[in-house]
Amino acid sequence: MATGNDNSPSRQRLHSFWLTFWPSVLRWCVSFAIAIALWELCARVFVANNLFLTPLSAIAVRAMELASTGELQDHVYVSFVEFASGFILSIVVGILLGVVLAEFPLIRGLVDPWVSMLYATPIIALGPLFILWLGIGIVSKIAIVFLVAVFPILINTVSGLTTTDRTLIEVAQSFGASAKQIYTKVRMPAAIPFIIAGLRLSVARALVGVVVAELFGARAGLGFLILNSAQSFDTAGVFVGVIILAIAGVVSVELLKWIEFKLAPWRNQESEE
Amino acid sequence: MEPKLTTRNLCKFFRKGDLSVEVLRDINVDIYPGEFVSIVGASGCGKTTFLRLVDGLIAPSNGTVSIDGEIVDKPGKKISFVFQQDGLFPWRTVISNAAIGPEIAGQPASHARNIGHEFLRLVGLSGFDHHYPHELSGGMRQRVNIARALSAGADVMLMDEPFAALDAQTREIMQSELLRIWQETKKTVLLVTHQIDEAVYLSDRVLIFTVRPGRLKQEVCIDLPRPRELSIKRTPDFVHYTDIIWRAIEEEVRESIGREARSVASLHS
Image (cartoon, helix red, strand yellow):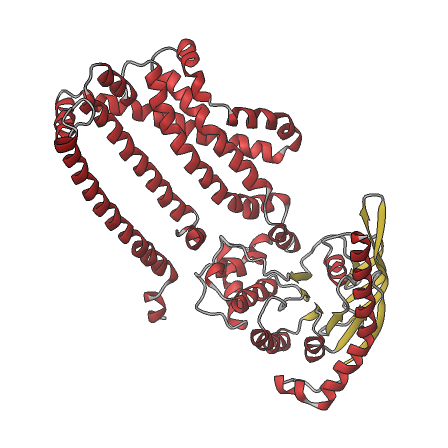
């Protein structure tokens, strides 16, 4: 039994996770180093005008300046609150509403056309209206983030709960499972990978939502920083905002991968690229 | 001896739009405790439908299924079903899959796991408790599937072509394993297969169904000594039995192929 423990499958899985994870970290580092070098070279040698392309070193200096006054932290904080509140709200509403729609085909029939319509609509274009209705503060941004992010989660929850493999349901039935047991022991776990796929789609939409909503009108936030810097020809300031957003995007996608690894360990093999 | 499982005048129709298709007609079968009975027949003879009726997964159009004298109208604790596709829950580990029968029946988790362990050991899969189904081979998955059915504690096991998806060598091994498990657990088994040698090797009796609508065409008692080794498949007696069954089934298969050809021809005309 002692040898069995050394080779426990959960450890093997963790091991294979790191084996696939580390090379990708290395690839990222190398590719970043090359990009940074190229950027610096281009900005210093080929494009001498700092308005068009600012050297990374200048962007770093600008970031330090913004951080020393606490301004940068304020922008990051505001955007983060808008993003997190809107995204969490869309997770809660998307999953709960998805459960309801999956359970009641009649309601689903009535709501479906609206869901597909709103999903296809570039809701972000309604941004100015939301600012008119809800003000220039964070509430209008949370509303926009919520609306752009909720539909992929909602749609995936519904399809995850309604497309369960017939055989698995029959297996549970043949063991005498009640309708409730079939729900909790078969349909819910079968829907988890779908829901996570929905979260992945939504997180990208939510990030775009925050920035564009702030561009339409705000008092603070990374979108506001980008807009403000652009209007005062501060190209370095624009890049500070963009780079922070890029980092936020990568971090949130990796975080979701980790959540999937934890919630759906049986999916590891399929999700390895 | 009282039969364990009885079907009386069992009929099943399926509706296809306005059309009513008769799948099974007047099946009368008695299966005795501890018996191993196989059903063979051409494809589309309603073998699988018959098993689903017996399990109570679908309702008969006419006639009854009873187990220990009680009418079956929904899946119950007395019968468990081994599906053709292994139907393991991909999000559950091997032990958690094996323990789902007692778990659904409301047993405490630790007790359910103990039962699961016991039957995983019986099917020869100790030490794979925490693996997920996708980490196992087809034969191992089917072992878990059988352990899962056994751990539900039913007296009767219905098996729907459980080894059809396995390669030939694995299938042979699984057949002899199934015999060993059956002898150790003394279950009553009703197995559907399209492999005649599998039916002869495993069974006390083989039931041959006609093509649609499926009726009981012939019943062959397999009077081979037990316990049976795989090498028995090469004895003259064994070949004799497969020959009898093959001859009974041959015209049904030809009829079934003819029908398919005609329906394809009518599609293209």
